[in-house]
Length: 348
Picture 1 (cartoon, helix red, strand yellow):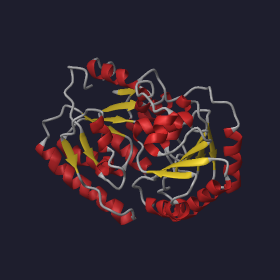
Picture 2 (cartoon, rainbow, N blue to C red):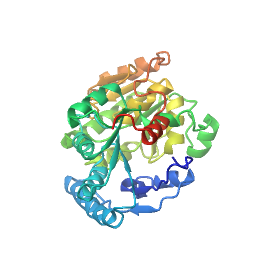
Picture 3 (spheres, rainbow, N blue to C red):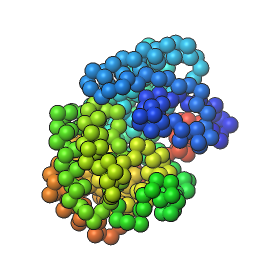
């Protein structure tokens, strides 16, 4: 959109993108050459239920003022996904009649409260860019209309062919992690519908890591969901200064995709593994219920939080040939399809 004179684009950044604790990922956007004229700081420190609820209220309040001052500035607001911060920003826009376009609607994640937020955002949106045909059908059932629903695939996959990745040597120089060694890429987010179990889940995964001594583990840290700090505390206690475990707050897209390219197996409960790993020919061990209900390509294996089962599955998949099947989230390139839908709407 930046390169197309048809559009005038402005970025609104908020949530963890502005938090140094979570890696200040706004820096990645700036490094790509984008200006960020609008920054709305509404994140409350802490990850208890009350902290999350307070962050939602504060975000909605600050966006209420922002939308009031800018109600006629934008023809369309793009929002991605299902986080509570995005839900609050969109909810605050409803009374102003602001037109919303939503990415990744129609998806289901039964183990997270994000499921509620995602469907709510879809109901508040006028345009829908979904990632699979099944999600297109589900969104029709949710909204009661087939208008303005476009199956474009997952937007993140467009970056795979366009971002030059690090070499193993470059990655090692930047992060002090040698990906020529057998490596597991692990991301464990809290299950927000079972917050009391997250400590036990983290302990189980720590035992998995300690059992697999032939691998080094690259851990991307949990997000700002409820009780994410419980997982962080287990990681810090078990693996601070550990010789074969590396904890990274924010790789950025280039660093994360480089890990996907060179790792042996992806482990955890992150949507990024489910959506992106297949395009890097990697197998995924999807643990627990956080992503239950989400469509998965044939490279993804579901398993409960069982230490022996997870260990055996990782060993089995690490010895398998690279995955060469389909990524069901790829539909030929989302970016161009989105731009064409905006310029030449066909089903509105």
